[in-house]
Image (cartoon, rainbow, N blue to C red; front, side):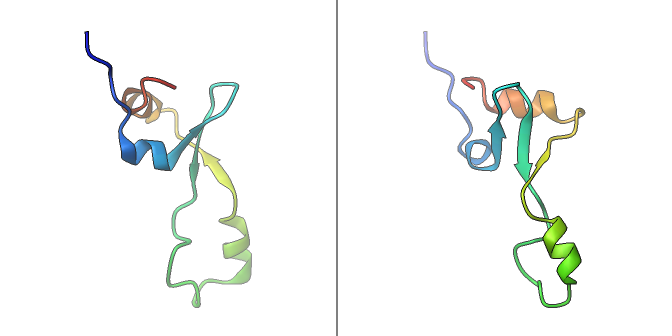
Length: 65
């Protein structure tokens, strides 16, 4: 029987917390930051939860976690 591999892209993008909640990084904070206000950039810090409609597909990409 072969081992099921984790998708490398999913491994880099998602974090599974101890309670089973899947976290992701915020979008829109990589470039073109000069026109964004300080308030917007501050709110983009940290992690956000993956939406419940996408949890099944994320779990399929990360079967070992």
